[in-house]
Length: 205
Ligand SMILES: *[C@@H]1O[C@H](CO)[C@@H](O)[C@H](O)[C@H]1NC(C)=O
Ligand SMILES: *[C@@H]1O[C@H](CO)[C@@H](O)[C@H](O)[C@H]1NC(C)=O
Ligand SMILES: *[C@@H]1O[C@H](CO)[C@@H](O)[C@H](O)[C@H]1NC(C)=O
Ligand SMILES: *[C@@H]1O[C@H](CO)[C@@H](O)[C@H](O)[C@H]1NC(C)=O
Ligand SMILES: *[C@@H]1O[C@H](CO)[C@@H](O)[C@H](O)[C@H]1NC(C)=O
Image 1: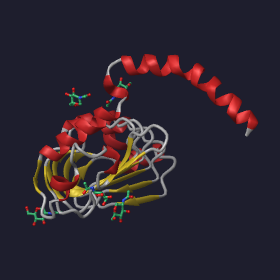
Image 2: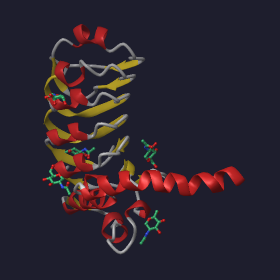
Image 3: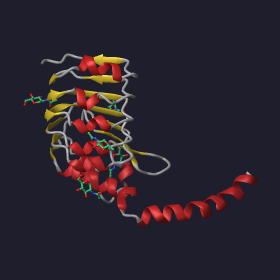
Image 4: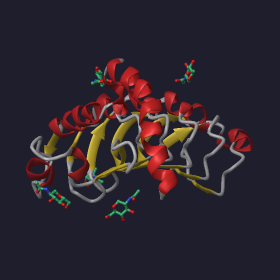
């Protein structure tokens, strides 16, 4: 205890210049960025049958207390977003890619539709990506850059080549691909997926 009491002021002195520098270097390091991203997502939800976002995602309350939102205890940045089963209809905005601390994203069992923004490739800390909705188009090849990804659940209406969206994901353990019209040489890329424990096909070529 005596030791901690001595160390804390020292740490503050050491850390302050660092935080001062990151805070002044524009807003990617702030919860405000996360709030703006979530408000952009909310603004494109066209149907919210339980009024969950409409009443709960209020700018008068702290983002980390919003329903479906979890923040890290240390940085107070959004680390998980869970819309699962809220019955929402809408499109996903590129702003979602601004949640730079996001590790878990679960938007299953809603009616999100349209294309998936390429900007989601900015979610560099993403570990788990659960989409089971009505998306269309291709799985952006940029998602092949999500190097921390351990689980991809793509139960949707995606089309196109699967290989480039997964071939470099060496941490991928679980890959679910049902209800897509994907083509490509999944069997050729599997040998790169050295961590893979579960693969859920089918692909209809
Ligand atoms: C929003 O939902 C959370 C989680 O259910 C709850 O703790 C919080 O009180 C709600 N906030 C408002 C303003 O309704
Ligand atoms: C999201 O919430 C649902 C329902 O509360 C839960 O079953 C699911 O495990 C959650 N997803 C994640 C990634 O924690
Ligand atoms: C968030 O992302 C959008 C689109 O990707 C971008 O135009 C915007 O400038 C970003 N906003 C912030 C606050 O970083
Ligand atoms: C997808 O869309 C179809 C009709 O367009 C609808 O019947 C179905 O419920 C939707 N799926 C989800 C998960 O909302
Ligand atoms: C992946 O990231 C690298 C380095 O950040 C970049 O050069 C490359 O264009 C990215 N690839 C995709 C598919 O986004």
